[in-house]
Length: 90
Ligand SMILES: [Zn+2]
Image 1 (tube, rainbow, N blue to C red):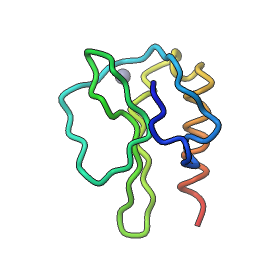
Image 2: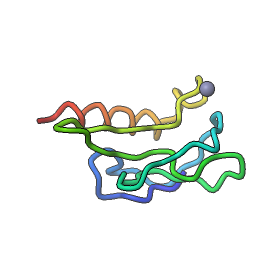
Image 3: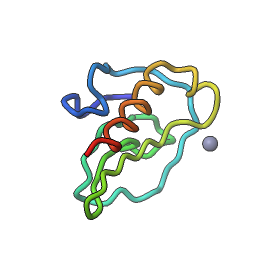
């Protein structure tokens, strides 16, 4: 995983990392989102973590998280924790 936006509350204190997870491909990522995570895996779409907003709501999308391989990954856990915290703040 490449952290492409490092100065965001969801990705702060994280460096690029390796994770074993399920891949998805051929999905659309609309223009205007802020990319957070990308991968160069040949069987995966490129942007697999992003933020956006809808009305007054913050949105975080994280493609990762298929099974225990993700749940046991400290980087994944940090992203999920920081995403929940960020969307919960006013
Ligand atoms: Zn899955």
